[in-house]
Image (cartoon, rainbow, N blue to C red; front, side, top):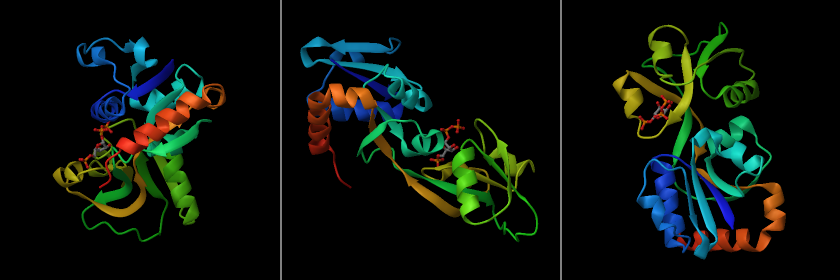
Length: 208
Ligand code: PRP
């Protein structure tokens, strides 16, 4: 049996749709919206819904054999897992954004509000720019509006949240997409099943 940690929400539903097409269906998952764990013994597959940022923890510690997590979460937390496949889903970008017209003159320490402290630190260290991180957990866009920070480092998908709050992208930090990851021991002990699943899912991926 392969245990799969899926990120709860829109991305996870798309990922499940892909796995279903690839022959790893588990019909009960579509019938119940409160249950968190679903098994299809016939297909030797078991899914659980996990908070997206927790997926790498389940996989790293072996509670799940494989899982799906955004590249943002993988770069931020650097879990010891294998990255097997870019699923091409959940595409967005990590970007620096600021109030319209903002220019960094480089004269003083830049205040950066973000949920992604490690990514932001690394990005500015590469540029030799001194920064002060303001760690937040959500609604990051508020920080520069209220003067809590100069800029934000955050996920931009459609750009609507920035637009609605009079912010704009200053620089793109990295492109992001969902990745299939595996527990290191599972990858050895369930090599056949995991490789077969990876290859089959790959065949059913739509390329845009
Ligand atoms: C993310 C991100 C932005 C928004 C970007 O937030 O932090 O706020 O999506 O999407 P857009 O470019 O399509 O508007 P999320 O919904 O994950 O909630 P959060 O406030 O908890 O970060």
